[in-house]
Image (cartoon, rainbow, N blue to C red; front, side, top):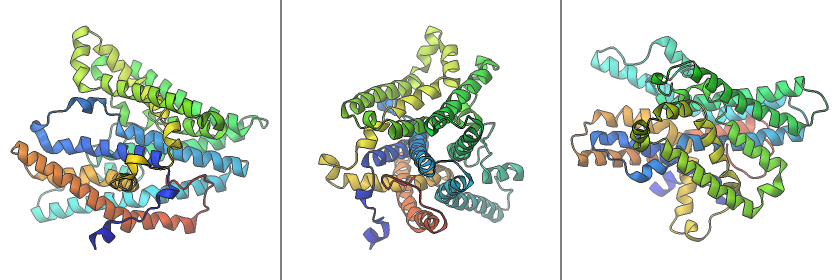
Length: 407
């Protein structure tokens, strides 16, 4: 009975296994980082943690690759970027992301109000004006996100990318010379976002003293609109340069370079080396780097992984044994639900209320945390997220695709 309850019935034949691996790895890294909250002062970071890539940035690049491919194929098939294409794109993206988000958001608000009512104390929610921002994804549009539901900083960046990239393509198609090919228009839009956002970060970074540290750029929408664009650049390369994209030798070389650069970016930005920067007197340069070009480096380094991972179509060998492939596909499918549920709803709202009085209690909380995340995310996906997502098939036009990969 339990097996039936938690089975998602996903067909691995219709999925790209390498992209599932990326998505599963990304969410596992994110949840692992949040799990350490339960350990409090008993947490001792293992060295390999400092070599892990940023899970959120992996999500950004993967999402950009998927939605970029959809936009490019739709644009090329239709021959122009018009209102119907734009509205259909937004309908399908928002049916995928908004219902589950609003369900969890409203649930957190109701829970906070119920707790306040039971205790007779004032609720801990932010003021109404701030709370309303969460419904329009402007909670971190031009400033760092408030303490309430803080993990949604990345979702806000993604949602605004869904808006800005298609609108920019539409504007460029209208304003640029009529003889410009679609390929050039798409590349121009991608580079405009990447270069423009990097210039904005650089300009703002120059206006603040180093003592202001990293300025929270990582979680501010206006400073991170390029996050998705690196993945879109990979989709552009796949569509217009298929021979190079499918070149096995080139794929492996790019994978190695991407892994090395991603690992170096993670390690050189880790806490373990910060004291070294201070000791040798380059901490100010490091702070400026983290405000500016760091995001370009991690975006491009992870983009280099895409050709190999996209070419990894199915699981074989050890991956196909012992249910490993099925577990990876399962985690990939429920990754968005895991993202929404793991930090604020589960860790901060419930488990943080249990004091961590010893090493054993801390690790017990970690185990309970992982169990709750996996179980509740599976249920949320199966009984809410997937049915709502499937509803879009009846309300929107299916976009051209080469393989069924949910974006």
